[in-house]
Each structure stands twice: as structure tokens, then as C-alpha cells.
Image (cartoon, rainbow, N blue to C red):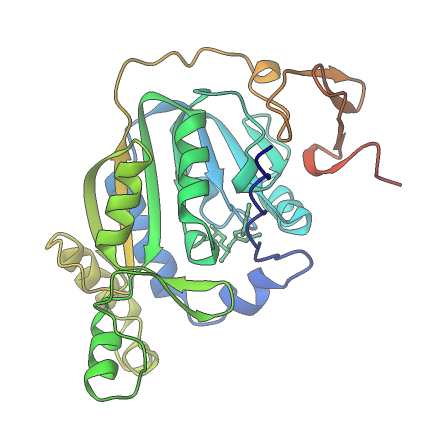
Amino acid sequence: MTKPEPRPRICDYEGSNYRTEFWENRGRNYEDRVERIALQKLLPAKGKRLLEIGAGFGRLTNEYKNFEQVVVLDYSLSQLQYAQETLGRDPRYIYVAADAYKLPFRPGVFDAATMVRVIHHMASVRTVLAQIRRVLAPNSTFILEHANKRNLKAMLRYALRKQTWDPNAFEPVEFVELNFDFHPEYIRQELQAAGFTVQQRIPVSFFRLGLLKKSVSVNLLVKLDSLLQKTGWLAAPSIFTRSGTIGTSVNNLGLSAIFACPECGGDLERAGNEMVCRKDGHRWAVRDGIYDFKATADNDD
Ligand SMILES: C[S@@+](CC[C@H](N)C(=O)[O-])C[C@H]1O[C@@H](n2cnc3c(N)ncnc32)[C@H](O)[C@@H]1O
């Protein structure tokens, strides 16, 4: 009998103050704005159902207004609760607590997916990309942001021997536990291996330098970054990629039919405040407007 694959390590944001400690009033207005600009360049004009993977507190969720439904997914329940507070109980938003390595959905139920500032926490790029490809219908769009090890600052630091790891090396570098930097070509090849066709890559956040941000107006930096994004010069610390899937769309399921058991892939049935797997009997809680695929209802006390 073959042993099940060990579960990849997860960077757990449960209970973290990511919103207040990293974003709010932390001088990252520039990064936030240039990421939104890149997203708008890559998003389709409209769509039906988008999956936002590792949505955190929903910082970017309002960029997806041209989609009829947005599934806001994160491993951390507390991040989703923040997202709910900000975005509200609008029925367009479906909040799901789940592990991206085991997405709790049937194949082909989304026509778009995004994952921004998340894959740098992923120890198994291959597993997560295979999961995302599985839940996307043919002719879908996948926007992936990844940290770029071949950025100008890293290249310079390496040349000056202030950094031990080589930014030109193909393999990802784990510079802090569960924090990876990737070679753009590595990500491109992994996307292709998972069944995506890479259509466009945009370098983002060229001016992510404290001193520069303090001395030059954010508006000017944003304008310059937006211009540099057009060059396709992959030397910025962050790269946004847009990939497609081939074929024709089959995505016409209603909400109740999109979910599948994350353990066995079986069909789920709603029973009161639970989703019950018809195949292995696992029960998953739905509470306070969040579908919780982290803890089974059986184990939850
Ligand atoms: C740096 S935050 C980014 C949040 C958001 N995308 C943004 O740009 O503001 C990374 C998020 O990824 C989530 N995450 C990490 N590993 C995950 C996994 N295996 N499954 C689902 N979410 C995960 C974390 O809980 C966290 O909210």
C-alpha cells in the first residue's frame, strides 16, 4: 500500500494582527496601490465565480466587483472574521475556512482564481497549483502573485556579498521559515506543469525601499511603477502572472453544488448548520456565515 503524502507545512495566521501590524498606517500605501493597478490590468472584464485563495482580511476583495460571486477563502478563521467585518454579509461573498492544499470544491466550479502574497508561504508549490487547476473550469483565468528572488535589491546585495543565497539559482529559497522567494522561470514552469498557459507577467513594486518611500511622493512612485509594469522587466520584488486554462467552460453549478469533501472529494449535502459528506460521513460546520472546512463538526466541541 502506498503511504499518503505528508501534509505540507502551513504558515498559520490564526489570531495574527496582519491587518494592523502590516498594512494599516504602516507606510505600505504604495505597495497596496500598485498591486491593485496590476490586478486591474490582468482581471477579465467580468465573470461568474471567482476564488480568492489566502484572502486574509479581504484587503483586495473589493477589486473583484465584476464577478457575480466571490469565494473568500483563507486558512485562518480570524482573518475571515475581519474580512466579514469589512465586506459585510453581502450574499455575493462566500466565506470559506480551508486549506489551499485541500480545496473543498468540486472540479471546474470557478471561472477565475487569484492568489496574492500567499505562495511565498507555500512549501509545496506543485500541490497547491494542482488543486487550483482542478477547481477551475476550462477557459478560466488564474492570477498569481509571487515574490521574485531576481529582484534588483537581491542581485545587488548578492554582488556585494551581503546576502548568501544566489538570486539566479533556479530553486526557491526559504530565507525565513515558510517564507520563500522564487525564480520567475521556476514559477512559469510549475504553472505549465499544472496545466496552465502563462499569458502575461507584470513586475510590481519596483520602489519598495523605505528611504525612497519617505523622500518621494507616493503618487509619483505609483505612477512610475505603473509605467515600469508595462516594460515586463522582471526585476521587481513582486511578479503578477495571468494564466489561462484550455477548453470550453462547464461552470454552471449553483452554490450548494460547488463544495466537495476536502478529505475524500465526496459530494456534500447541507443539513442544518453542517455540510455532510455522502461518501465518508465527515461533517463540517457552517457557523456565523463561514463554511469551516478546517475542523470537522464531529471533533468540534
Ligand atoms: C500575507 S497574507 C496575504 C493576504 C491577502 N492575500 C493580501 O494580499 O492581503 C497570507 C495569507 O495566506 C493564508 N494562507 C497561508 N497558507 C494557507 C493555506 N495553506 N491555505 C489557505 N490559506 C493560507 C494566511 O492565512 C494569510 O491570511
